[in-house]
Image 1 (cartoon, one colour):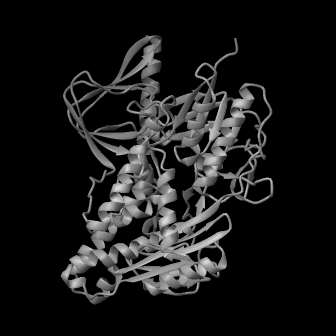
Image 2 (image 1 turned 90 degrees about the vertical axis):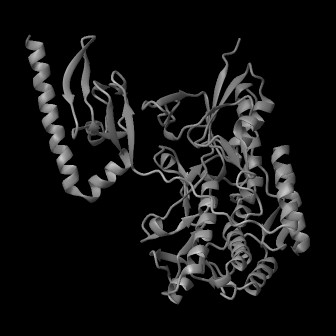
Image 3 (image 1 turned 90 degrees about the horizontal axis):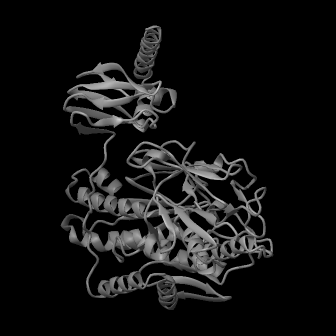
Length: 541
C-alpha cells in the first residue's frame, strides 16, 4: 500500500484556500493529508474589500473561516519563518510557548502573495498606508473618520485643509476603487458634521502611466477618468509618489500636496521568507514552469498567485486577479494529484474571461469576453458576478443584505477603536511558575518590578541553580543579543511582577540608541563569565 503523502499549502488567500479546496475534492483522505499555514484563520474576499472603507459592507462580511471552506484541511495559524526546499520542511513561528515548529512535507504549495514594499523611499513606511488586508481597510476607515472628527473642531484653516485632503497612489484597479470609495464615503459622511458641510474635500489619484486602469481598453479607461474627474477627483498622470512626511505627499514632478492621508496600492514584492529562497526568480517573483512547478524543484514544489511569475501558453504574464488565482489553484491541485497517482501533468492555459472595476456611486467598467460595458449596467454586472463568486452561502447572503440596507439607510461612520498593543507589557507569576524553559526561543527581555526568580540550568541530567534575581534585575537579553535559544530556565521564587520588552522593540532600541545596546552587551559578557566560573567550580567539586 502506498504511503500517505503530506501536502503543505502556504498562504490563505485565493491561491492557497482554493488549492486546498480543490485538493480536498480531487484526492481521497487515504491518498494525502492537507495542511494550510496562514497567520489568520479566515479568508478575505479581496475584490469587495474597498467597500469596507465606505461601510457598504460590514467589517466581517467579506471574510469566511478557513475551517469552514476547507473542512478536511488542517489549519496551522502561524507565520511562515523559513522554507527548506532541499530537506522538505517549513519552520513556523512560535505559539504561546516560545518554540519553533518544523512541519515536514512531501508536496509544497507556495501561495504567500505579495506585500507592500516602501523600503528606500523616505517617509513611506512611517506615513503611507497600504491597502492589501482587512486590517488595512479597517485602519483606513478609522483614520478617515478620525480626520473628519478633527477637521470639525479645527480652527486652523491650513490644518483643516490637510485633514480634508486625501491622496491615493496607484491607478490600477485597487487604487481606482479605493479613491472611489474614499470620495463616496467622505462626501456622504461630512454632511453629519455641521462645520464641514460647506467644506470641499480634495481627492488626488496619482499614477505613473499615461492613463489609469492600464488593464482595461483605452475607451473604458477614458470613461473612468472622466467620471472620476466629474466627481472632483484630481488625476496626476505621468507622476508618482516618491516621499512622504506627516504633513505632505511628495511627487517625482516636484509637486508637494499638504495632507494627513496618503494611501498606496504600489509597489509590491514577495515576502522576505521567499526572497531568501535558493531558487530561480523572474522579475522579483518565483519562476515556475508551464505546469506551475517551481523551477529546480519540479514534482515537489508548486507556486501560484502574486508571489509567482506565471505565463500562459501564449506567453502572456498573468495579472494578480482572483479569477487567475483560482484557476492556477485548480491546475496546481490537478498536478499534485497527478504526481501522487503517477499521471502526466497539466499546463496552465487560462487566458482570462474579462475584467471588472468598480468606480463607486453605482458605476463601473467591465470587459467580458470582448464586450465592453460602462456605467450603471457594468456596476450591476460587477456586483452580480462578484456576489456569485463568494464561496460561502452565508457570506453571500450577508453581503446581499448589506447592499440592500444601504439603499434604504446611509452607511454609518462609527469609528471602531481597538486597543493598541504597546511594546512594553506586564506579566504576573506565582511562586513556582516557569517564565521560560531552557531551549525556548528568545522573544522578550524581562525586567523585574517586584519579587524574585531563580535561574536554573540542566547539567548532567540534573537541575543546577545559577543565580537568584530580584527587583530591578533583568533577564532574557542574552538570547536576543546572541540570536540563540534560552540557555537557562527561569522560575519564579516568590510572587513576581515583570515588564516585558518585545524582541522587535529591543532590537529597535539597540540600533537607534547605541549606548542601550552597549549596556546589555557588557552585561551579557559579565554573566557569561560568571556562568563559566560557576560551571568550572561545580565541575571541580
